[in-house]
Amino acid sequence: MPSQRRVKLFIYLLIAGAITLILFSGHARQGQERDTRTIKDFYHKTKNAMDRGGGGGGGMEPQKVIAHDHDADGDIDEDDEIMAKQMAERLKQAEQKAKENANAKSPNKPDPPSNIIGVGSSADGQNKKGVAEPEHETKEEHEVEMELASILKKSPVIIFSKSYCPFSKKAKGILLEKYVIKPDPFVVELDQHPLGPKIQDLLLEKTGRRTVPNIMVNGISIGGGDDVAALDKAKTLASKFRELGGKRVDITERFIEDAQGAS
Image (tube, rainbow, N blue to C red; front, side, top):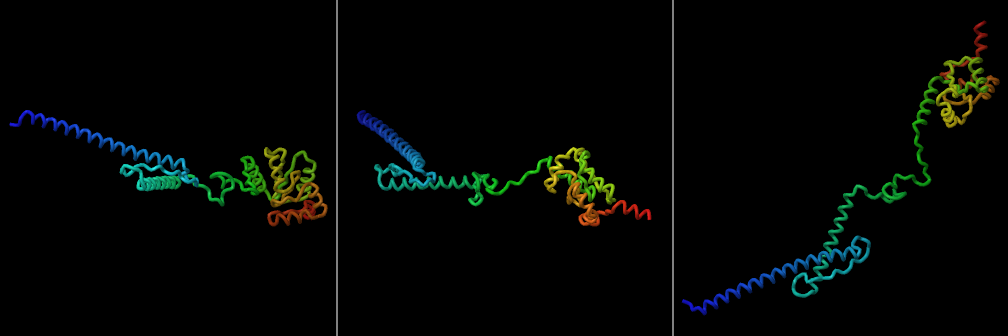
């Protein structure tokens, strides 16, 4: 049997070996944690340095990245600097790629330079300098347009009048009493029409004449009371109506027609 002294020595050796193993494992874990922290610190410092140095594409030179003992050889040498630069370049490329992907997915792409007049994406829709904006017709204006179009379909000869106007009475007296016009002229008393003032404004725009009477043949104004009286006096009123109305208008003097009927 081994002596008691040898047994004690063996126990001491086992205890010493266990302590050595524990110490060695602790140093190994600390080294791994230190390396991990070193890599993480290097990543964050590299990214921050790029952000501060204009890595966003502004044309500034990125700040120089401080190298670490990346290869864990105990000192910072040329290999560590090369590895740091390579990692910084990879980060920069990844950032640029992310920006390109984001721009490709963006719903609001910038306008082409040839289309930009104002500011922003709405520039192409803005009025170009010197080009008039198209006028938008209001609901009331549309109603007046439709009413005038409806009136002009009533007869080839339209008399726009006002019931109290002496010039209108004079024109109606000549056209309705001295002449026989077929189809019968359609008379619009603008002072009694709900859209009378608006129709007068539109007539000014269409014919250049706002006053009454305004006599129209086939959609063309031949003037007012004085104009009708002058044509009648010159014996050219009927020929003027036939010229403008064509086959749509039949006009004769009433007294001549009556004389022919009596004979």
